[in-house]
Structure formats: structure tokens, C-alpha cells
Length: 523
Image 1: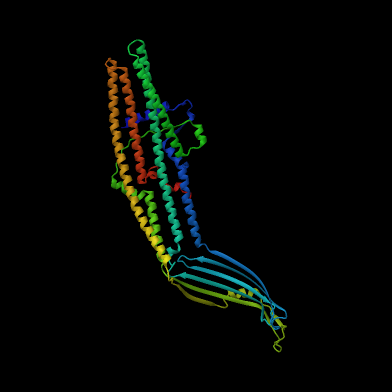
Image 2: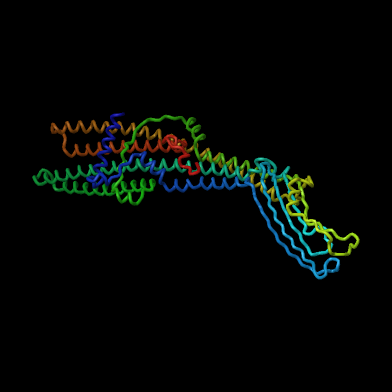
């Protein structure tokens, strides 16, 4: 086994040296291992870059949902100036003018079980030209505490946090989608890398085959010149040379196509593409037998497949949505509680008690605005109220429709999960069959290559004693090159099937010693 792998490694080195033009300038060839290509793809692949933004968007949505529990500050300032005609000389001689200004502030906070708490403070000043006022201007302030708590509809910790829970689950789903993209890109990169290795090897085999045909053509020409062969043999050899030249053109196109596919996966920069004329794969495919049972593979996939993780999280989402819509079918019963402390102040106006119709005051006792505020803050006058409000809609059709929709979506998600589990089972079976078949192909083609080596050795011995011809030996040499190429293709197919098995089991990242958190900008 080790001897075969070593021989294939030496063969691959000679492959690239023979197949790629312009190798005199080493700096023009980009040598890459499989790990190099995977790392480049993880860092630069556009599909990965696009998918990496989804967890970032989901994290922003989660942060926005959490803002529900940030306190809300509000302020209000109001000025008013009213003037109206007087209906009595007791009010005013001509008109009544009233000036009013107020300022208020409040802070509101949502609480985890669906209620809200508000603390507010307001202060106002009212001044009028109307006669016989006992306090003018008049100042008032009120410190107020208000509490509202749903008891049926919208009650509960989870119900209150529904936006946060949904946003958190959506973030987890986006992470599983990113993980699936990473698995797919790893597999695609491995596949493209090994396809490039084989395309280069196939080109080398065809070049060697052309060389053999050209040598035979020259030999036949010399034989015709001395009369040892008929001229038709030259035409036959020329036809073979032309056919193999066409094969080389096709093989060169295959190399470039495989190279371009690898470049696309790595999202290679244009400057780097212009700098290097070709990509030289450094790694050789290895044949390491891997045995795993269907039951073991299924258990691994159920625990690691990102698409199954995403569907399970989506199932949790739908179950939660069903519980929310069920809650909305309940009547709206709310507890409302208030506690407030007012404060009053102002300039006290004292009139002549012996002449009550005299509009001129005999004394004014000043009362500043701050006294009203002080009374409110010191709870000089205490007031409270508690009440219940019940709202029973006669037609709850909309809510019932939402409940029916949520239940249908839950049933649909359950079926989607079962369908995906069936698809996973199918993919695992196909991957295991492909791996087993390619393993047997490698063993069979190894035997074929070993027999071809023995045939060539025997034919070379026969040539030494004159019992064979150069043509037969050349054909055996070509057949041996084809056998080596076929064995290499089988080994490559086996490695690709192993990469696909890792993908369908959800182990691509783990087996490459990578972690999802490395690709999350939200980490």
C-alpha cells in the first residue's frame, strides 16, 4: 500500500512538470495543497461571504427585539394663551385672559410578564385676569405611579418575550444555514482539487501516448525507406498521431476548466490570476479504508447535520407561535393600579371681608412654584386606585384564524422534518454505497495495474530475445500508463466520496479542525 502511494506521489510530481507549459519560471506556478485551497475558499468564497451576513442580520434583529425592555423617556412642554369676552363686570371689565404653561416628564418600563410600569411628574402654572380669584397664579404638580398587568391575554414570561425568542431562534437558524454552506464549499473545493489533479494526470498520459505514437511514426518512416514496411503503415501511424493530438487538445481544455472551477471556489483575485500561469496541486490522493455502518452514520447525521438542526429550531419556533396564538384566544383581563401625589401652590389673594364686591385685594401672600413640586415629592396628599378591565370580543374570528394558521404551519414543519430525515437517510445510503464501490474499484484497478506491469516486464524480456516487436512494447507501455491513470482516478473518486460522506454526515468542519464560531461576525 505505502509503496503504491509513494509511486503515485512521484507520478503526480512528474505529471505537473510535464503537463504545464512554461515551467522554467517557478514563480509563475502557484503551488497549493488541499488545505491551502480549503482555507482560501473559507476566507474568500462568495457564497460563504454572502451567508456570513445572515447571522449578522439576525443578531441585529435580536438586539432590536431586546430593545423592548429598554426604558422609554418622554417629555412634554406646553404653552397656552386664551382670551375671551367678559359677560359680567364681576369677572372682568372688558375681557378675560388666561395664560397656561406646563412641563412633564415620564419614564416607562416593560416588565417580563407582559405588564408595564410608568413613573411621571408634571407641573403647571395657570394665571388669569379674571377677578375674585383666591389663588392667582396657581401652581400644581403631580407625581404619579401607574402599573398595568395583563392577567389572561398577553400574560406570561414567554409571551412577553415572543419577539426576542423568535429572533434568537432565527439567529440559530441562520447559523445552521451558514454551517451547511461551509460544508458544501469544503466538499466542492475537495472535489475541484482532485478533479484538477486527475485532469493534469490525464493530460500527461495523453502526452505520453502521443510521444509513443510519434516514435512509432518515425520508426515506420525509416522502415518504409529501407523497404521493410509498406507505405500504408506510415498513413496508419500518422492517423494515430493526429487522433492523439486531438485528445491532447481536449485534455488541455479539461485542465483549464478544472483550474477555473477551483479558482472560482477560492474567489482568486484578478491580480493573482495574472501573476500565475497555472495552479499546481501539491497533495496526492490517499487510499485509507474507512468502515462505518448505516446505523452509526445515521446517528452521526441526526446529531450533526445543519439542515436538520435548522428544521428542529424551526419546529420550536412554530410550537412557540402556536402557544402565542392560543394565548390570544383568551379574554383581555388587565389589572390597573395607580398611585399619585398632587401638590398645590400659588399666590393667595385676600379681599376686604367688609366689602366682598371690591375687586381690589387687600393682601397677596406669595406661594412659589417649587412649593407645589415639594408637596408632590413629599407625598403630602396621597391617592391610589386599583381596577380590573375585561374585554371579551364577541367575534374572535381573526384570532382563531391565526391559531388555525399556526397549527397548520406546525404540522407542515413536522412533515418537512420527517421528509428531510428521509432525504438524509437516502443521501447516507448513496454516500456509503459510493464509498464502498469506489473502495472496491481502487482494489480492482490496483490489481489490473500490477498485472499490466507484469505484462510489460515480460514483453520487454521477450523483446530482448527477439520474440516481440517495438510496437507491442510501446502499446504495453501506453496500456500501463492508462492503468496507472485509471487507478489514480479510482483513488480520487474514493477521496471525493469520502468528502461527500463527511458532508452528508455533517462532519466536514470537524474533520478539517474548523469551528463555526470562526466564521461568525457576531461571535
